[in-house]
Image (cartoon, rainbow, N blue to C red; front, side, top):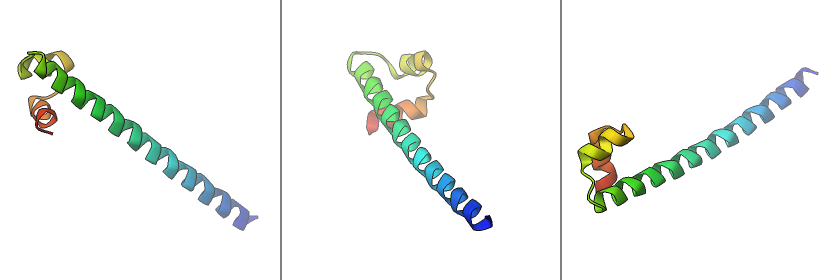
Length: 68
């Protein structure tokens, strides 16, 4: 009985790890999308100030996106 519970807990932990990994991938994809959008806005003449203000993203982050 106790061993079965331990085994179930291990399975739940393993599933949670998988969910976390998937979430990390989703976040990374969204980060890529934002990076691309920021670069596109810059290429279309938007200033870093405008982008930072409109998207609510700190200027330092904008610079990192553009430099990447």
